[in-house]
Image 1 (cartoon, rainbow, N blue to C red):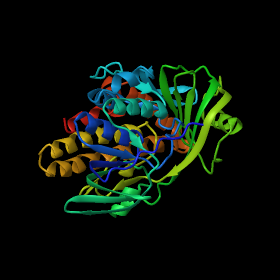
Image 2: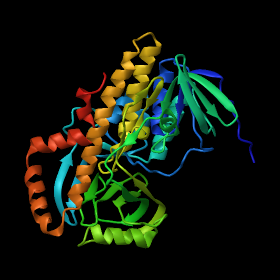
Image 3: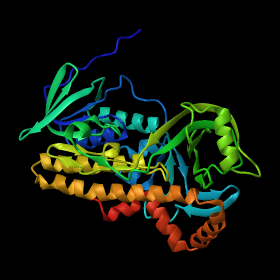
Image 4: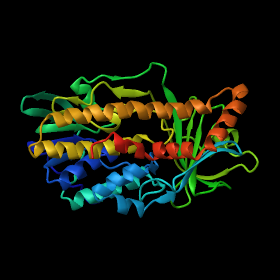
Length: 393
């Protein structure tokens, strides 16, 4: 058995990034390409191999193009040129992406593990790497930056980026409140499966059902990602459980049949947004700053966009730009987080309309979807391209 190489942490670094998921990797790559000294750490011994997030939207791909990661990711994904909203066998809304003002007129269906692999490869080409496993145990900051304590090591950094997810240790140690409505906890089922299905594989579908939404999204290698709200789901939903979800919420006349489960899990979350994205030299990005329903596939995309924005802004500050640029980053990203969280919640609420109200809901959705300008606005919103007018260019 080959021994794992242990790389020691530096005593000092310009930027310390905690968390090597898509957000942390993107921030590190953005900074490394600008010649910034960056140290990226993660507490896991190995990267996760489960797929979790499964869609990369057009605006995210535009930003990944800026840091050299867009083309290799597109080459490994499945292009989906449309998105559909359904009530069992009825198509209520079809949102086409072919008129989007971008070269990426599709949503890219690709597992998060592949996204992380591509980012890791590009980071290596830029001279960076992930240092593992290092668990953050302490953090304080002063006029010169921040001091981070790990098991057996201390690192002084001019800046620290929290990219360590929903339960961010950096955010907690920095004392930044993570708040949201009290009644927003939801449980979700997540699975990659092989199914016999008549649904088209050129786009993702969300089924609006009384029990909650069910997302059906094609992945490469003939796999399908299922995401659904659920009450007290098992830790690892099996084929029988997933089949029941499809039977209750999916196509009725020609129902899907689950043939194989490659991976499944459950998770719970509250809608939360950090009260600030900056505390002195400590900066938040991704799930460390915001978390919300996965409806619409917005979470990882918003985190990657945070990371490119923050990486470019921080590189400008380190090159001599004014410190207030980082306040402007925080002021840009926090309202976007609230807006995306609200959008995801509205998609979820559409699904749980009581049976008496579903005919009216369905009629309104079909009428609205018949208007091309409305479909275009929804496509802009799903793709993230509406952010172009609110982000730093």
